[in-house]
Each structure stands twice: as C-alpha cells, then as structure tokens.
Amino acid sequence: ETGVTQSPTHLIKTRGQQVTLRCSSQSGHNTVSWYQQALGQGPQFIFQYYREEENGRGNFPPRFSGLQFPNYSSELNVNALELDDSALYLCASSAGLAVHEQYFGPGTRLTVT
Amino acid sequence: QQQVKQSPQSLIVQKGGISIINCAYENTAFDYFPWYQQFPGKGPALLIAIRPDVSEKKEGRFTISFNKSAKQFSLHIMDSQPGDSATYFCAASGDYKLSFGAGTTVTVRA
Image (cartoon, rainbow over all chains, first blue to last red; front, top):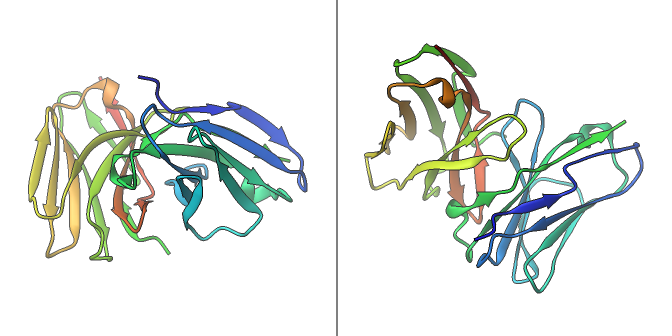
C-alpha cells in the first residue's frame, strides 16, 4: 500500500509569483484535503476535494485554488504569492468523507522571498 | 479563531516519566478527537483517537482521557522514551475538516 506523496519537497518563490503543489493520495482513498502549517503552528484547513469537486473550504482567499483528478491525485495552486504564504503545505487523504481517518503526506515546504 | 486550545506549548520530561497534554474545545458538533505526532520535516501521523461517547482509550503507552461535560480531553504518554520527542497536536473532527490545536513540543531527556 502506497502512502500519501507530495511534490516538490521544497521550493522557493518570489512574492507575486504563482505556485502549484502536487499530491498523490493513499491507495483506495478518494478524498484529499489540503492544510497550511505555519512555523510553530498547527495545520490550518484550506479546502477538501471529494470526487473531483471542492467539498469545503477554510478561511483562505480565492487565490488559493485546487483540483482533483480522476485518479484522486490533487493540486494546490496559489496565485500572487505573499510573504505570509511561506509555510509547510500538507496534503491528507481519506476514504470517503471520514476525515477523522486522514493520513498526511510529508508536506511541501514553500518559502516566499 | 482557534477552535481547539492546547497546552502546554512545550514540556520536558525525564525518560520513564509521564507526559500530559491538555486540549479544550467549544464546538459540541465535533464528533471525533484524534491526536497526531509530528517529527521535524515530516507530516503529522495519526497516533490515537477517541469518540465523544468514550471516556478513555488506551493504546500501548498512549492514553486519551475525554471529559465531554467539560469539553476537554488529554493525552498521557506513559514511560516516556527519547523516541517520543516530537510535537503533538490534538485535533477535532467536524464539518469535513480537522481543527488542530497549536501543538506541544515534548522533549524526553535520557
């Protein structure tokens, strides 16, 4: 069984640029949730995708957007990057909407300069 | 607005000692309360979880105590080992998402 994988591991972007982060869900999982974890903080929910549709969204602006593909992998896109977007971005997958059984990937560390 | 409050921010315990982390919540619609363990550079890993109709759950050296009336729950790590040194997050599940506490960094001294 393959766990949740994310790419890239690290990246550095400049303020104002756009970035795309990728996530492959665990085998058998059809729901992907994205979280932002600022340094020294707990993860904050960005949004969730279930069966290729956005199923819920946290308190993040529209410049944070996402996609889920037929194979349940997912992308997180962030436009017009700001310095405060520097964080660890975590992807978590689950079977159906059982979010209490979410399994997290290792994250992508984004640094905005 | 943080829906789950966690304390302490950090703690140091001697090897073999007990680590206790406390969390409190307000939203009575939360229906599941997991704890996650995170090592530096890694994503959070599910450690143990409890439903609100259960007062205690034990898995190995890890025990969750849950007080529904007080809207509080806690994690006890018994016989703490240096390998337990990590950041621990409590969370609450509701409305398709997890709400996390701010985390507790546990350091176990040998």
